[in-house]
Length: 183
Length: 58
Image 1 (cartoon, rainbow over the protein chains, first blue to last red):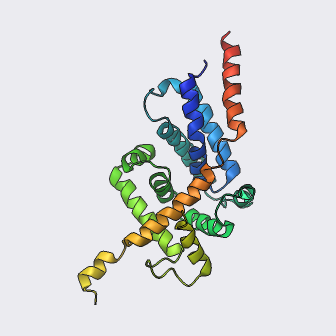
Image 2 (cartoon, each protein chain N blue to C red):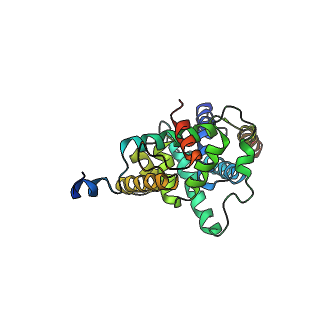
Image 3 (tube, each protein chain N blue to C red):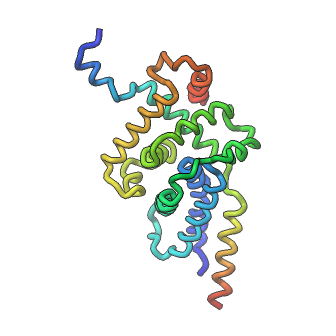
């Protein structure tokens, strides 16, 4: 069965943020790309269960998140991004912000428990509402809110941000924060 | 000086500035990945899937 052009377009349009979500979850670009590929294959095989007019992006995120969850349970003991392929893959992109800043942020993000990390990334970066994030993670809206709050608090600790005027003693941390304000 | 109640209120809750800075860093981190666009392998994947399906159904 051919995909309707609008469905195909919507799928491809969702790929960049779907992929960013996968990288945030897995901490590894190769694994993230495999997750995206598996997600797209499942989506195409089950395209009949997609309701036209609903949010394609949320549907794909849900599939990917479930795939990651079942894979994560299997691979729990593996060290994330042991080969540093994430950092490697980003080297060729001149537009990005300083590598050091992002490495530090990535490492901090990876230290969060998976449920907090996914909630934070869905709400704080992927543009989903608390309600949509709750649907994607199959949990209550209140659960998402508390996960996001805990994630923020933990990240602030990890990056040594205590208050707006006191960014911690570390130069790199200050660099991260000024990078955040550059736009 | 902070009262006991104020101290309790601020504990475990981030102030607005810290929250918004964290938010911006997270958004920048995410957007840098989004900017990489759609890798060719995924365009090819959709194409191949459709071609395979076409063959299978004819």
